[in-house]
Each structure stands twice: as structure tokens, then as C-alpha cells.
Length: 134
Ligand SMILES: [Zn+2]
Image (cartoon, rainbow, N blue to C red; front, side, top):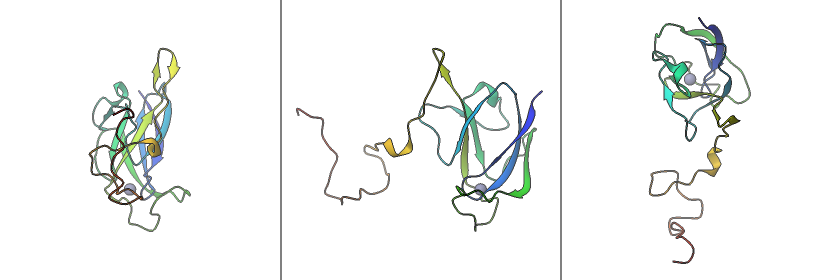
């Protein structure tokens, strides 16, 4: 069926090998889900989904192998930490809508309204901005 492709955890660098359909194009591996992408677990029919949700070092799904290798890529968040780390990360496939590639919303553009996101750097009394004209 598929062929094996390796990815690494963006948190700790643990390398995972996943067997998947060759027609799928990988967009990115990120520590957070992309806005608008639907993820499946490796044990599910993820090839019908927009991406795969990994828990680092977990899952013994067929086609999934946690190798002993650890990537030393520059974008690994905590290269000194134990690998695998047990944290979540997301493989996103390239997605098309009306024949055009769908672009993901960069994480920095996220606006958390009423959520429990990180505190505003401007302090607690900055408050949410109301819509203009109100
Ligand atoms: Zn990890």
C-alpha cells in the first residue's frame, strides 16, 4: 500500500516512521493543529483526513514505528529533553479546495477571544478590543 516516510517530533526530535499513501503531500509537522484541518489518529484511516495527530512515543498502529533515532534539527524545541516525550504534534497534509492549495493561518495570527491563551504582553487591563462603531 503505502511507503514509509519519517518525521520527527517538534518537541523532542523523536523520529517516527509512518507508512502512508504516496499520493499524499506533506505540508508541515507542527506542535499545534492547523486551523481548519481535521486530524485522525495513526490507527484510523488518516489518509481520508487532512492530517495525523501523534502522541510522541505512543500508538502501536500498523504502519507506525517509533524509531530509536532522535533528530538534531534546529527547530526541535527541547533537544535536551527525553525522547519520546509523550507530547502531541500534528502532521498536516497539503489540502486543496477548488483546485487551489489551502494556506494555513499562521499561529501568530490567532486571536484568542475568551479563551485561556497566554496573557497579553500589554497587561491585564488591555482588555479585548470591541468591534469598531460600537
Ligand atoms: Zn516528542
